[in-house]
Picture 1 (spheres, rainbow, N blue to C red):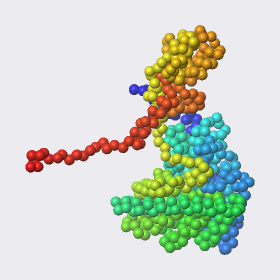
Picture 2 (picture 1 turned 90 degrees about the horizontal axis):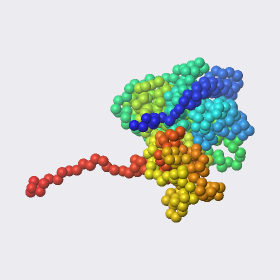
Picture 3 (picture 1 turned 45 degrees about the vertical axis):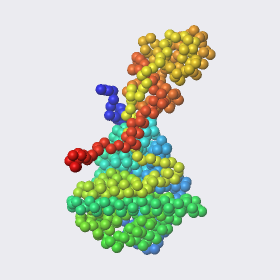
Picture 4 (picture 1 turned 30 degrees about the vertical axis):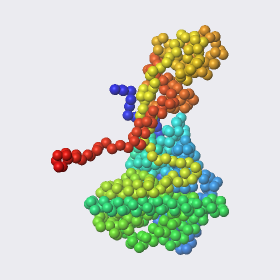
Length: 589
């Protein structure tokens, strides 16, 4: 039994990072409160010309045709902020957060933390058809990164705190801590380890407990549907396929529009204002298409909008959302997608053979989100957290899984990663246990070792081990007690010959090597040693103090870890064979 091996590789530093994450969770909750109030403030300023933080729907305005100008004014302001402040505020936030995590060592600027909520408040408050989730993920992530930069942390630890801030902000806005943690796992962390999972859980929990102090504690869209029977299985499958197709279509349309704007002969600063013209016209025709639209989502879930009216509203919403986001303005994707999914569910409920009509609006709402994000668990639990409807859990899980499978097979990348890929940076979203993490030095090390005695003279060593046919590239030097002193290769031999007499003992010429490995260390750790120090081999000793040599590991030995992976992934075999016993010759005659 290997008592030194553990299930997890975390240490007490986890407590230190978790404590910082708890502070970030509270700070991101305040940021969410500020963002939502900025949206309310700018909505009142733009549509009602009053300085107020009261939550009012833009559809209640009395501006008439002048309302077309309102989104244009807001987008002009945001274009100026993006050009002369920070262009990182452009887009819906999640791709930018992913890019900072994977390619920017999780470093985000104070400008983003300030300008992202401000610009999003202006865009959404002036009628932009977006939600607050993308901006708060970017803002919370920036807050987490900024706090982390004040401590002596690694890039991996900064990533954890960035994601903790992002998901805590999402928790504060929607009241869905479990979905926020799942979003971190499925979309932002790119790992599933205690070192990152526990701080994120703690940050989301703090945000969840702090939310009632600043915001409404009730579910955003309270709903209660009746339990479904087996016939709902077929409806969930069809709904999942339809939602997957809608997700793929919306994603492709968004980037087609983005390409269209990129071909315009004007600076990108003006693109949001051009897109806002369409937003203004759409909002003039369908006033409820303006803004976040949580009231519309609630009405769709509770079937308070007629099918024909819902179809017209959602068509306008889809068009203005795609054009506005494709223009590079600042806004989120979740709320518009929830609305479009709920609208599709309204249509599905009209032809469904059974079940509560509200159930299919909820199911399609989550399934569209799963297809677009590529995160089925997040989508299912997010819908559950928004409504508190546990009767819908099984249909939600099935439909989101089908939608996710459709987009995985039909699309090369999701709406979250396409933008990053267009910048020349590919993201691979699948991850599993690294074979090098579950294999240890003692599993692959060479134990049949040719050792050089420390008492051997330099010239005798050269003649015996390095002249003629040299069997190995380097040899370990050990004392009479088996203590490892160092490795000698041809380059080291030439250097020692130039500096010392040939009669000098090799053990006296070498400084005791500081680079050693221990049997219980993982092959990933060993590979890191070799890469950082630029060496080909490392000695494995029994204990850092005793340093008794027990093995050697070379770069070629590390390849052995991939053999088990190859066998599991690529060798196909049929383990159970059914054979029919042939009748005997006598019986057949």
